[in-house]
Amino acid sequence: MSNIIAIATMVKQMVATSSDAYEYLADSGWLDELPQERIAALYEQYIDIAKYHIDSMIALYGEPSFHFEDGHFTSWFPEALYGKAWRIDDKVVFVAAEHHELDMPIAVVLGAVSRTQLDKLAI
Image (tube, rainbow, N blue to C red; front, side, top):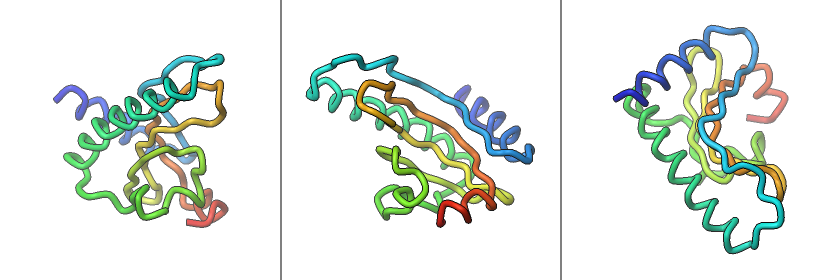
């Protein structure tokens, strides 16, 4: 229950602001020279963490508007390993596992992106 309350509080603040907002919910730390097998295992772990937070979002806001599996993330969030997103007011709020570059941390991020930014990114 405390995760749902925390997520609800963060989303409310993100949607209320005029700018895009991001909150990192978990990260692996730097992956300096980890073997590929270990990175693959971390991908699975951080996707599971994202799913945990996605379950909280579903409890609060219902079924997502966008699903990673449908290819909706690839046009505007190519670093996403997995995620779901909801239209809330004039923003798209998402939870995603992400990985930017090989040695950078794998992370789970809660974000809110404005309609203007999404138009630029082709959603």
